[in-house]
Amino acid sequence: MRGRYPSTGLSYAFGPGPVTPAVKALLIANIAAFVVTFFQQQLLITFGLQPKAVLEHGAIWQIVTYMFMHGNLSHVFFNMLTLWLIGTELERMWGTKYFSKFYAFCGLGAGLTQILLGFIPGPIGAQFYNQSTIGASGAIFGLLLAFALYFPTRPFLVFFIFPVQARYLVMILGGISLLFALGGGGGVAHTAHLGGLAAGYLYLKGKRLNILSEIQYRYLKWRINRMRKKFDVYSGGRGDDVNRRVH
Image 1 (cartoon, one colour):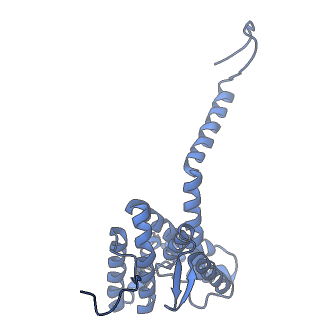
Image 2 (tube, rainbow, N blue to C red; image 1 turned 180 degrees about the vertical axis):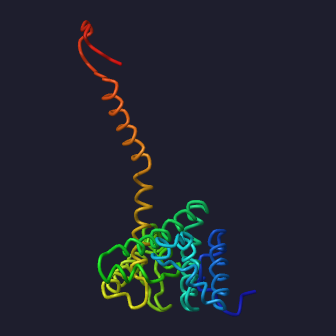
Image 3 (tube, rainbow, N blue to C red; image 1 turned 45 degrees about the vertical axis):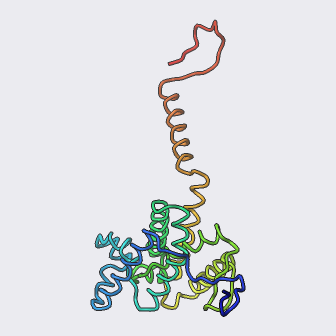
């Protein structure tokens, strides 16, 4: 018996499928933190990232906790929506351990960017040094960069209407963040977005080049050369050279 409506051979789905473990944990943590801070606004100051508090008062925890703080409903909603849409697929491809490390690295990189900018002389540096940064946007921007590198032609529906390929979307978002950062920010930490992008790129680039092994190799080479000088090591010479010294 045929169905009432003939099949067109097309199917539609929204979202990346079942949520993965790390993304699920991040969603719960961020939403729970938002609910708590909604009723206890002073916690945004305690757990948001302020370079002055970190450097002068030892509030080291802020470099991590700021990623779970959000100022309003739209802020947390769009960050968590993006985390779910792209983070689930990246974690499914990478595995939970690699995904978690990458997310943390991008978030920490975005936070460190805010702290380093506080050392700029003059009023610009003072602005970064005293202001508080909250939100997972820096880590989310790192995920966007990774998604664009792995799935460059995957379309995103901007405003749920206009399809834009992932690579172009990241370019547009990065350009907007740079433009607003140069213009003062407008109350949004666009420099943290750029820091998250840069951290994500460095992490992925470093993994491809195996930068840790390269550093270890350079360090061992330096140690060997130092030992040669210290112990008077000479190479080469003739086999019958009795004055040749090898120690």
